[in-house]
Length: 534
Ligand SMILES: [Zn+2]
Image 1 (cartoon, rainbow, N blue to C red):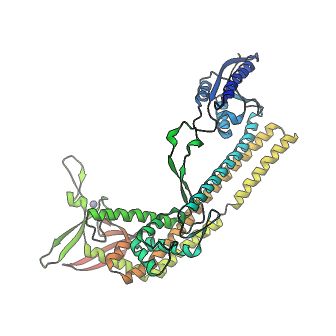
Image 2: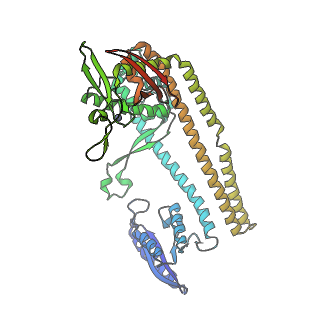
Image 3: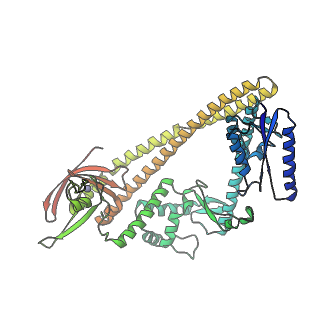
């Protein structure tokens, strides 16, 4: 039976003479196939288009692939690897896929027949070259981004905390100290943007441009500026003449290019993440404030540990004129204790309510206990940080990187040996496979270590944030009234029945679990509690 053969060609229609060359390519391939007595001519697949852009028409390529899948082809002729698909890497991927379907590809200019014994080897070598190509491409992309950034910064606003020199951002240590101070005041000390602006003004700290004064909007913009964590967000403008001129809908379209770790950061990523979370939380609670009354420190922060509902407040005026305030699971308030309703669903909650004064006394006493055990807690956190940093130090990837270099050298040696004729192609393919296998293993190991190192150094930075908060807690307890301190330090309280509660504080990495007992009435309460082990 004859071998069923087709050919693929790709031409640009930008110039008229290339349309002619489509005809000549088709003719060339058809004759080439018909001249081989063992071959049966199937079809010529020809795509026209402007090379290198999205506008390229690849319908014929897809038709060829589907013919190959449907067993209408045994062999495909084409000119060269780099013209077969958008780039060499994709070409090779398609070629390998076709080979798995039993369809060979002959690249006439590259002198490769994928069904030949050394076809795979040649593809491997080409693939290595392609990798180099894509590396160069990404370097070009990076260079282009750097160029755009240069332009953006030169013509853009001045940036407090950085100096601009030859288009690169370098840290201005003096100003960076103020940037760190601002993030610290906002995220660690829980201060508002108005307060921070006032304090900077009072401390006679200058902004970069002397006509600008510190204001809440300046502070807010600074807290949201991703450049301080070392990232760069760029608006990428698609210029119409970059693509096909006909595609006018691309004009003016913009997308944001976000480059992580672009330059030296001023603040840690953990503090940045924390700050962004705080920013969205505080603006959300501001909205809430305008909708509902949010006058209590624990409003919206109490959660029922039994059913997951929010706790809501209820107040009543006592005979002696004092206001009695307590918090209760909203589900329990609506449905009472657990029961089955008319539809056969379980409703209600058995959680108890908690007196507002009792809750305040517990929190206050816990905060004081943290304050008086401050040294011990901090030293525990510090030793935790040391442990994490140590892990990061030990787990170096240097030896693995050397291993990869070593394997690459071996691969090159084997290629040389084959070219010299010292070993056979089959041996070379075999060795290459083994080296690739080892290489993948090492790469997986490196990835694993890098992941762990990243998590460890991230956790160490996070713990440092808690230490800073504990230290600033001390100042707050001394300077402010309790309500305000509670508002800043209590993130969440989960209440369970049997007088158990979990206190989530902004200054502690883990929630504090405790069991409490309260006695008294009419505003006079005594509270006892004991910490529970996790
Ligand atoms: Zn409940």
